[in-house]
Length: 219
Length: 262
Image (cartoon, rainbow over all chains, first blue to last red; front, side, top):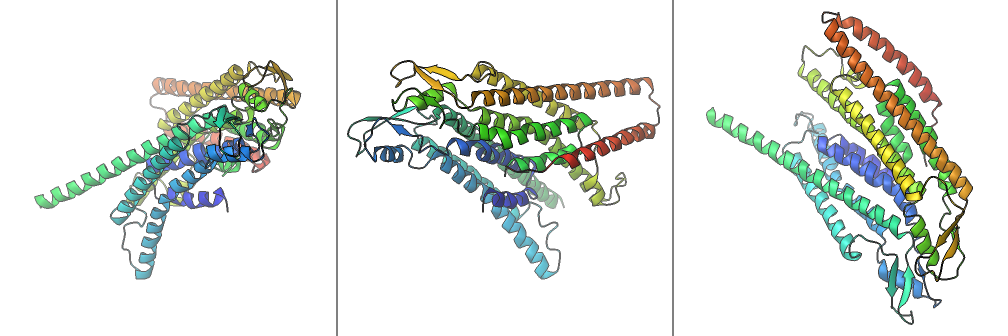
């Protein structure tokens, strides 16, 4: 069980997405997941071993690390990727439900089970809203937990059992900051893509509804 | 999801590329991604553990390492490879869009549509002309820009491409100017020069491909301007023959590309 499992699930989603949705999938796969796996994971791999405090007091380093990194950046990143992927599964389930219904009733109920209209449109819009919501929540969480997106070189720690205020040094702070900014920019790009897709679909279908009503009235 | 997945995604684009584009893709996967995964990552694997400073002052090593390596070579290469590969997706998206349109035409029963079934549409290879030419050329242009930007960033960040054995560091909390020793500097220099050389080759291939596409474009335009009544099928047959030859060459190239995963 690894990222491959999620990838397989999500390549199925691509089939039912709009053009913007497919760009979103490409951005998430390549600029977020691939970057996470081939680059970011290795930067944070030994973060605890390389976290060094200017003290020999046993336990001080552990306690200070825990104080400054309640949840590691990389774990938050992974959680964010998982949470952002999962609303797309709502669409997959709905399409599967449609296909199942057609099979059971042995008649064509839908023009094409994957076409985004009616109930599937609502599901798709909800999934877009949820994706955007999760992105924003995680960005705010990152900001609040770490006081911005900067990674300092030095943190001052005075948690027990450290006997006084102790200097603790974080490993690779610049590299971590670069990748954090990369994560933030790709999240923002994904938020923009989701919002454009949301407005596009809402606009398209309101025009469709309006035209249908107009034609009915004329008849 | 790893480099193998990128290989699968880009492999699809290969069908619609020119011969130079196919060579570029092969060079990218064998001489850059594969070298990165099987060799370079091991060389840089212990870079911080074996970065040793001549001091016992806690924190000095961390700070000096961060000062001299704001972003590791290996991460910069990984980002470079990702950014350089992605313009090809523009072409993949354009092709997918064209296929979608043809499928829609086919389903509507359009008489203009010349395909017998959907499978034929799926397997069809599009010639690089019209709007696809513009997409393809833009993708090559972006590739060139990304390659150049990353090479410059490399040169700027590391003052050249050589990895020194010794660095002198006086960042706080180091008590004075401290000697810090990099692990495996010669091996790192060799790999850095190798990766830069292969990047340069890729830049040359991209420039050659760009020139080839522009030349073809202007020749086609001048032919159209000079001989407006030329039979359309004649040109298409010649192009189809050339494309078939390209496909044969690329297929034999593809068979020698070994699939891999990190």
